[in-house]
Image (cartoon, rainbow, N blue to C red):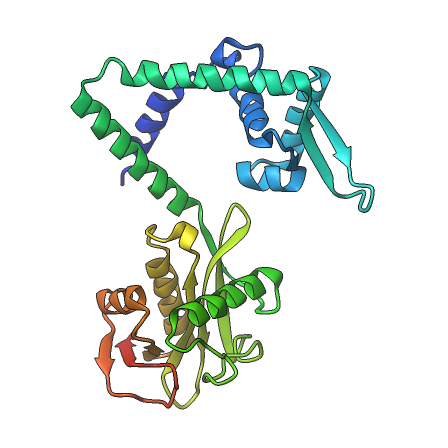
Length: 291
């Protein structure tokens, strides 16, 4: 469903922006090389980060960089401290080429908008923003991760930091009901981590109990990707994991200052219930049947 519409949209966009040409923006290089030039930027970029940002195969990125090096536009340097770390930097010629591509990109954008009425321009720009948000949302990957993994530690620390900033009187996770690494490691529980271009942007966890409902813990989404529906996606995937584990009911508690979380839980079908634990930071308790 919708596959034909997506393919038609892709064909229209690639043709309109000139992606089909081997000489993007009337330069002697394809779109891939032009995009890499722009992403490297004036300050240079770690090659691993470049690959992550652009979602490129390492071999293909190496070929693109080699072509740019042969043209005298890019220099790739190895770190003196770690030979595995390489940084791509634009040469003076590369900086000039990037400036020219920027100007021509502005001209292309203007050529798209110019034939349209003011109302059509506003509609197009609004539609582009919505498409961009949805494409980013579709790029996010969610998977089960060992809570000791660096991505997991990053998310959990960001979660603690945000609670400390938003809760009245701060937050000390040592006072809260525990959800330690052992409790979030199968079979005791699990931790889902969401990544965007290989960078961690969200998490959610489950604590299983043989004699009672499963607990939802550590729900966090980076401010950079809020509004993309990632919180709902994480919650839905946690529910699916809980059901697959045989859990009939999910429970969670939350603080009154986390208004977005409260709205999410209610919209997802969670019912507010009397307090079922002594969590010192909680003001609302919710549960939902998943089987």
